[in-house]
Image 1 (cartoon, rainbow, N blue to C red):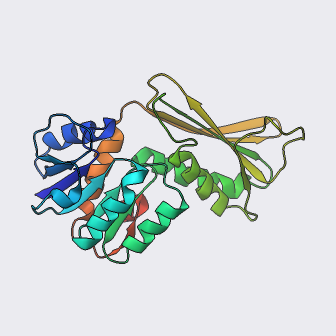
Image 2 (cartoon, helix red, strand yellow; image 1 turned 90 degrees about the horizontal axis):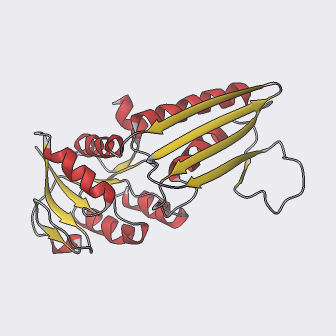
Length: 250
């Protein structure tokens, strides 16, 4: 049995994770952390430091502003942590790396197995097509998502960039430019509307042909299941930083 602390338990993803865990017999939530109010089948605290019990792993689906406190608690208690919060800046990523020196940290911009396969396929395609094809990424999400572009779009861009001979520039806004598209760039475009769970397209546009790789999420459950599986896998791991490829490879 894996005992989990869930940060952001009253958020949209937190509630989905609670539902997923309640249907499993290999893990349970022993405490929730959230500044919002609500009802849950487990005790809820406004700060992880207020929880005096024991846990095997922490899942964070809260907000980037809470990252320092979450990581501080994880390090202080040698508690492995799955960080699933998106929209982290460079400082946040540096905090993750520093915390990973003391405890196991699992971080992925997207917890879906399918999205991580899309990432691998995009990287492979870039190795073949990148020199002669223009590359664009389009991501679409619901109207409540606060960060743009999505962490997944940036993950895809970074994977593609790593396969190219010359590091490209990321272009987020062409409205103020009156020049033809430079060759060495990746355009990243964000759409926000309705209840779109998450859609990503990677477009390789060449002469007389277009190749598109895409992933569409039908439910937040795929991300919640991925985070829970990561938490169970991370239990007992040595300090270090892990991601989806670490779990897939065993």
